[in-house]
Structure formats: C-alpha cells, structure tokens
Image 1 (cartoon, rainbow, N blue to C red):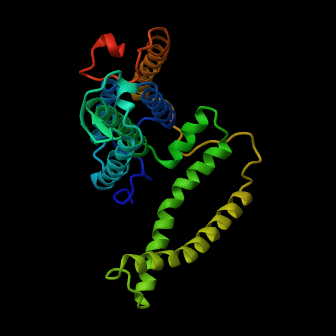
Image 2: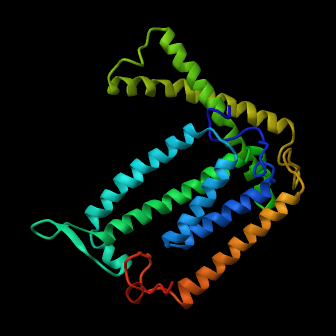
Image 3: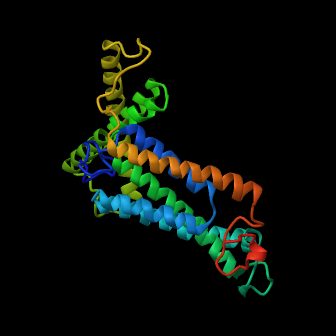
Length: 293
C-alpha cells in the first residue's frame, strides 16, 4: 500500500517516523508558519532543502512524489507564471523596487523585466517549499498518529477521528475504483485505445457505482461506531499515542527554535525594520529594496 500512495498506513523505521504524532503535527505547523511569514528566497530555499533532506532520509517511493512536483511545476510554474506575466507585468517594480525591461510590445502594454521574472520564480518556489513541507508531513505520519497528534494540541477528538477515517478510506476507494474498472473492461468496455472524450465519459460512468459503494461503507462505519458508543465520553485514547522519546525532545527543541525565529522575523523584519519592498532580489541594491542583509 505504501508503494502506491504517498500516505503511510504503517509506521516506518527511520528516526523521523519514530517521532510521536504531536511532534509531527507541531513541526508541520512551525514549517507552514515559517513559509507563510517570509518572501525571502534565501529563507524559503533553506526550508526547502531541510524538508527534502528529511524526505530523503525516510527513503520513500519517489514516483508519486515526482508526479506531485511535476504537476505543481506545470500548474504553478508554467500556467501561474504566465498569468502573472500577462495580467500584471508591473509586479516586478512594485514587489522588488526595480525594473529592468528587456522585452516589450510595440504598444508597451505587455513587457518583461528581470525583476518580474524573479518575482514569478519566487512565488513559484514559495509554493514548492509549501509542497515539500506537506509531503514531509504526510510521509512521516499515519492516520492514527495524525488523529493522536491533533488531539494532543486540543483539537476535539471527534474531529480527529473524522480526519483519520478520511485518510483511511483512500485505499478503499482506490481499490473499489480498480474493481469497477476491471469489471467494465471484462464486459467489453474499451478504456485504453479510445478518444479522450469517450474515455472521460466512461470514467464518469464509473462514479455512480463508486459513490454507491462509498456511501454503503460510510453507513457500516457509522453503525459500528454507534455500537461502540462513540461520542459518549469526553475523551478517548489512541492506538498510536506514544509518550515522547529522546528524539521527540530533540525535534521539539528544533521546532521551538523555528517558532522563535518566526516570532522574531514577523516582529522585527515585518514590523519594526520592515523592508520597503516585500521580495528580496539579489541584484536590487539594498538602498532600493530595504533589505540590509
């Protein structure tokens, strides 16, 4: 199952896998806050390299991860950047404080500058860093650990259970979809060597039995939870709830440093000593950008 999905359903053996759910959840929140707080490419690059090093240490199946990064590259790197270049060509000047135009149309309505390309690249890389942190979090945690970790930060346990069940139904839905697809092919429905429009039509037809089987599973799960008196008590224990170990304390120390840096960055660099322009650009002088480092 772990070879087909990015989501893990069995705990791993690496040091990151052995951290408990609360540490992983708080760590993901810290990385997310750090990425949101900054528009500095240097900081985002450091977060991205840290996340990729952690992902590599877990020795994952790189095929689905590569597909996700490729999809993000097409949707945000190409399409998103083209929209920025077309809709707002003056973003380079407003975001970095400088504009060196190297191409423009005869009317001057559309033009390209080096700062505009840097702004589009920085926005794209911000999304890449966000995806890297999300992939790290998903690879390191199981649905049960996620529920236990959310509950540890005082999220209501009913919400935690719903989140856990949502992740656990993904393999069942994928398995049902494969069974429906194989059944249709055995009945003579061609799904491989047909036009794109006909293939989409056949796949849409699969949604009806897939939804019916999914709703049947929801009813069975609901009845099982009612029979076990789910929701009658104010709290509950978790199968994957483990006490903090040595690795957790080390990781929490690093997370505390990330949170402290976020507070310092937001207070000092975004308020007290805020730069004139949001985005740091390597060739824009400090006097123009407002970045003194």
